[in-house]
Length: 335
Ligand SMILES: NC(=O)c1ccc[n+]([C@@H]2O[C@H](COP(=O)([O-])OP(=O)(O)OC[C@H]3O[C@@H](n4cnc5c(N)ncnc54)[C@H](OP(=O)(O)O)[C@@H]3O)[C@@H](O)[C@H]2O)c1
Image 1 (cartoon, protein in one colour):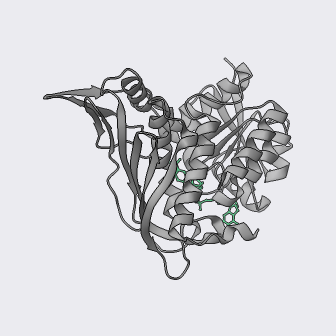
Image 2 (cartoon, helix red, strand yellow; image 1 turned 90 degrees about the vertical axis):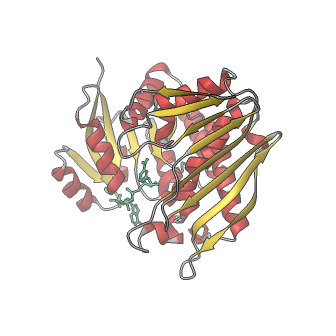
Image 3 (tube, protein in one colour; image 1 turned 60 degrees about the vertical axis):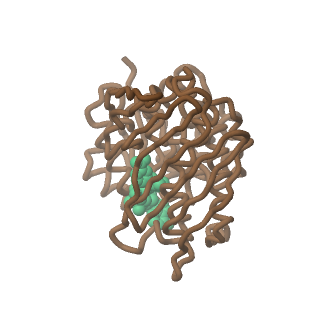
């Protein structure tokens, strides 16, 4: 068995989670930690028993690194992904891969130039739950799909840090709005509606007075014969349910995104008067997405069908549009 030697960029909460998820794997090992501060990288690496540490550039130049996981603030994702690709490393990048379609296009161009894969780490995509949902939709279990309802929201413990800072592309849309929007993109695609045809309308919600980031917001994602009601918040817990409506029935999951390091476990298919409960295996999606990137690299593929670039680009376009409709502050564009 080949072991993929990973570098983790970033020393925050999600970097810790990724390390924990790979800790028990025999086909993946974290060999280096990269940080915007080399001293912090060394401290973090020592704390987690990782041998290598340094600045982002030092870690990307390390020939012992086979693949890179990017778990830094939103504003750095596209740029670090391009740097990693230029250094010859395949990349698994936390969401959002890009803040707009220009950034995702730059990433795609770099991946093509390097002939290396990039995967945006929307972890719910890498679960039996989403794969089984896809098969139900594609298999016509609920007839022709017409609409989706999905939301993701949590009450942040403090109104500070990257989530409330426009300079780091904080706000509800980039942090959690990408879950319902990327799901709408996937369901539309499974139903034969091109993600490129989708647009955002009817955005409404609250902007924080102090920073101008959106804190609690909803919108419609619409395309030909298709509509999705999406909602996101960072100041309020929202339902994590996913609902897909077709002309012959519906699919409902009370919990569509999974939690922590566990993927979602069930959904219902409702047709006429009958309800079928569908149970699916639970996995650690961080490990599955890490393996997906390694497998794509080994096979010479540039992307993974579970989160293809077209979905990343459509999602980035729709998220930017959602924020623009709200008039949310976008001063991350100053840099
Ligand atoms: N998939 C999931 O379930 C999930 C869950 C939570 C978060 N996320 C995503 O993971 C990413 C990181 O989130 P997090 O919760 O881990 O955030 P966090 O705890 O605040 O950590 C962010 C990291 O970004 C790096 N960073 C780079 N430049 C920075 C700057 N100028 N100021 C502050 N930090 C900077 C820092 O590491 P260094 O400076 O040491 O490099 C920091 O540790 C985000 O993209 C978020 O959307 C995903």
